Length: 393
Image 1 (cartoon, rainbow, N blue to C red):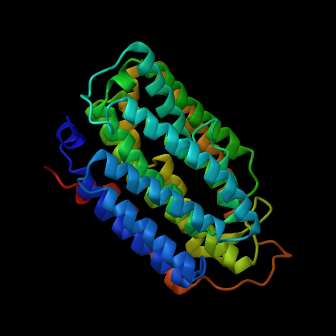
Image 2: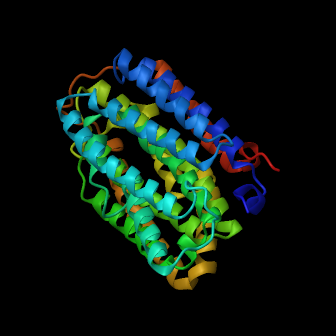
């Protein structure tokens, strides 16, 4: 069975179109708010092309090679940003090598890459496959507790560099994991407790760590870990409702991360430094960016009528159907923590009176805020009419 058969939606086409729009938005934004030199543009283009090709109907081996190549391009993107970014890139590189080896070995032992029949092997080999895939994908998605590379990458690189990694590359990797859920279900069905623990500790751990941050880009990095926990849970459940919620949630994650990091990037450029909880009243100086950050936060939490609600409520329903009221309450608890750290950032950083000693700032670049306005409109329209983004079989 494929995801298309299970959900009635052609996800390859959906993600391809959605990513093309987002990549174009990132490019226009980056022209107005520079993210790097010509080398950055070349690497960003290469990463985008590799991801888009990987989303097409290709073999599992080709898809894995394309996404692994895109991951190493992402390391090069980070490496060229600054001396601090180069240090973060080294950590990213070594962990990525480990992740690639784990996933590759796991898929080979599972028969995906070796040409063997896709039947469950013996108990020892099965456990080895499960362990390798859990470790490999946990590193790739920066899930708790193997998140070490992501926060420093987010803090030391330009906002759109991080978005290309967590909003484009990681989501494409997530689609690969979702496909494996149906191709080799025994990796998940017999070991659901391990995947469930990984999802839950990522939801709670990411949210708690986000609460501990003062730098907004680090906070958004940990919010990514939090959000990926929900998506993993939907795939683990394996029902049509769970898969649909996870896939829509992945699209929302990509859309709202562009808005959130894009807002912070404009404020950083205008203020001449990083944005932390010590900043005050940024909406008075950057009104469109403030609105985009607020809407992006509400969308990723799943507040109606924004697009995020379309996926999040499906994940809640699937979670309750799968784990009863206990799992539903756990998801609600993690969401409450998410609301707290986003509300804190909105209240402290964006709303309220402007700092008296605030530096003289540049105005919001018209082209960049136009991109944010278009994405705000898209989040609202897709929330009200989600059928626009889905191509039915």
